[in-house]
Amino acid sequence: MKCKKGYKKIGGKCEKKKIYLNRGNTINISNWWVFVIIFGVILIGGVLFIGGERGWFKSLAVIENTDIVNYLNTPQETISNSCSLALSPNTIYVGDRTTGSIIDGKNSLCQVFANDGTSWAKVYEGYTDANGVLVNTRNINVVGNFMFRAICDQNNNNRVDTGDCLTNQVELNVLPRPDTPPIDEGYDVGDVVGGGSGSGSLTGSEEAEIVFDLGDVSVGGNCYLGAKIYTNWEYANDKCSGVQGQQGVDWVFVDSSSIAWSYADAFPQSHNIDLCPLNWDGVNQWKLIIDPYSENLPECQINYNYNVEIYICECN
Image (cartoon, rainbow, N blue to C red; front, side, top):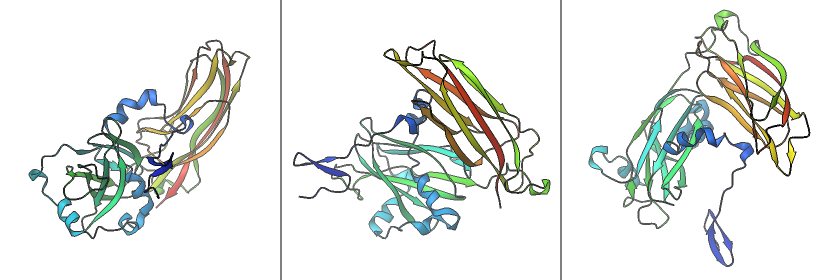
């Protein structure tokens, strides 16, 4: 007997596969769990990215089942169901993040559909957790106006049809960015317009915050800013590891609107990343935050180094 997709055979039975997240690849959950639990699902944003500027519907299979299409077109005011779809914010600039959520019964299969104004396409499916919530946050890299709706399995037959729960409609408006340096300022792709480098030491849970001044970079135009970031760190004394606990470091890079990159190091290592595009609003400065976390190691000291180049990463 073969197991269906998403399941594997264990002890002669088909059981749902489990997914484990590595802490080193996640945002510091202690600071963000409330935000993520309330909103989420824009896994659809990953699909938007795949489509690129050619129009993401060209990368998807348009729904041809007329019963499903008619069900998705059901006027919102005529339904009153327990499942729901939310998205926040509903209007963003291209390259920024948005977060949404599907709420339904626990461990329910839900499929997300999107409409670009001409047709419906399936863009994602997943299962709610034990609390009945399916969550995620993504950058959206395609300009356009889209309508989203989800159908969740109501009778637990592991598929969705017109007898299942239909959510409300949610709009997403992705706008061209107005907050980029003008070409008329003489910028070329690759030009470095800000940044800095440095080193230092931190003890225990002491935190460092480096602010980058971009006051000379004006907003508007059709070029985008990015950042090339190099970081590393090491133990500075012998109080950082052993039977009492372990010392680690959280790295966080923030642009004018939100966290653009974060990484949790459980042990000393270096990072070399390139972020493009980022948000510069002319007011809120960019920051690099170095936040050691320790387990009962107040005397541990670490040494850190960083180098940040803020540059023109692309122009239209």
